[in-house]
Image (cartoon, rainbow, N blue to C red):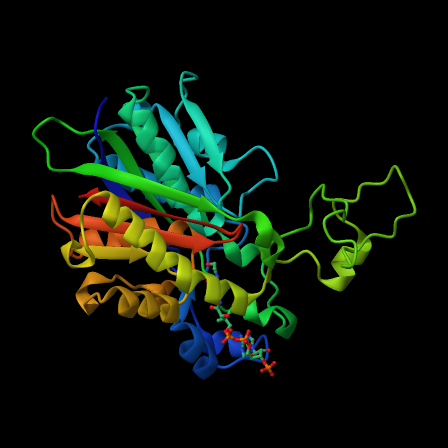
Length: 353
Ligand code: UT7
């Protein structure tokens, strides 16, 4: 068995800053409400009709590949985590392969659909492949272009003020015998009981069978008409993400500390051993709650949600990349990643940087 390490990292956020004040012009919301409830002051939005999720991911990926000191042609496996894919299918993994100019067909490309936990799930998959020696240079990307699919009217305000666009990427490789860098463990969890509490339900093939009492926007008249998207869904605004914010919040503040402690305990470590915790940037209040619960100092918890909002699968690699570029992580430091979100799915990863 090999040991795996993060060998390169990079991130990219679009240039356009969207302060809370700008959203006040679109919906009934306020800078005060958003800052108080989420900690977010602004987010970045990509350029419509010029940028997409794959392109943001490619910009982060090129930086991570350069940081690892390799060429894109040396990548032997791509893992792409997103909830805002460019196409319903195929996934962004193959689009990224094309965008990076990787022409080898010996490469595999996998899409991960675990939303906020997507990066941690992807890291776990990459870790297993490196450990077994199956692959040597795995590119893992988390990228989101949320701004394309949000409801910017007052109807969608509890969701749309939270999310932002961006991408982060890492390259995983086997660690050399004398290197301190090593992924110590990844821990994944899921509870499908709450699948619809944070979900983008239509378009899809669900046919409404999971929620007979809910209005899914079908007219149920024609057996041969596509019901992925109906006129009624468009009219009723059902083609947007739905979130039971309070339930997500309450569950998140339980699961985050538990899954972080799971990773630390399995490695024989405790919270004070952590150089830094990089939580998924869901809500500043959630991160602050987790910090208090684990007794962590301010410098042990990284937050950048203030300037980027919640970038879902991209939030952890963006935060990790920023923390690294700010000099807050040195080789050998103990780092914990933790995520919770739609599914519900949650997970953690512990490593020596
Ligand atoms: O990364 C994926 C995981 N997602 C999360 O972790 C999100 C977790 N949940 C949250 O962060 C919070 O639940 C929210 C920030 C989404 C909402 O905060 P909240 O304190 O739970 O607010 P609420 O949903 O209970 O709504 C309180 C009030 C409501 O008005 P009424 O019924 O009291 O009159 C909402 O309609 O705030 C209203 N509201 C807003 N007002 C201004 C909801 N969204 C907005 C808004 N601006 N954007």
